[in-house]
Length: 170
Image (cartoon, rainbow, N blue to C red; front, side, top):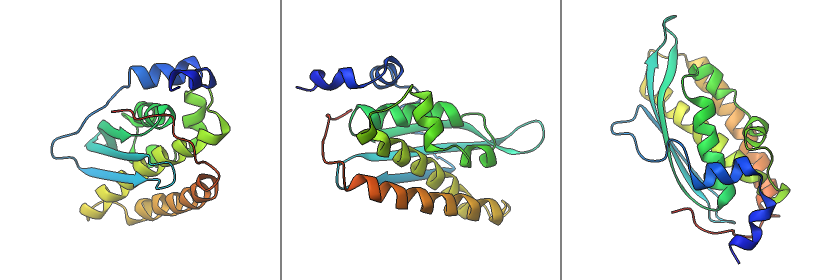
């Protein structure tokens, strides 16, 4: 039954699911973001390590994820880490669910909420970093939190309509 639904996913999505990038934990992360959806059972955790680029801007030097969920949840987590790696925190906080879906070559409509969850986990990791780092810009944290709140409201609306479960990732 699990493999029967695989035709609903693009080649890019299946590749991210079967060979996820940046899966695992970071020892002593600078920020951690965790989100879950009680309706579908997906659980995502994103870890970030922050450094500076040549312009002295804070960037995501390392990023990893742990996800318990369906094909779309694992694939969304994996592509999100690829999109965010080496970006400034400001750039990474602007990554949208649409960019995540586009990076996967599309998702079935009932699975788009997974891209929202991955996006929220990334933003929470960035917010967690800012909450621990008083020297960092409070404005950036507020902007990221505001964006996360909007995504969460959007995800709640969709998650009520999504009741299927494609399988566990790990």
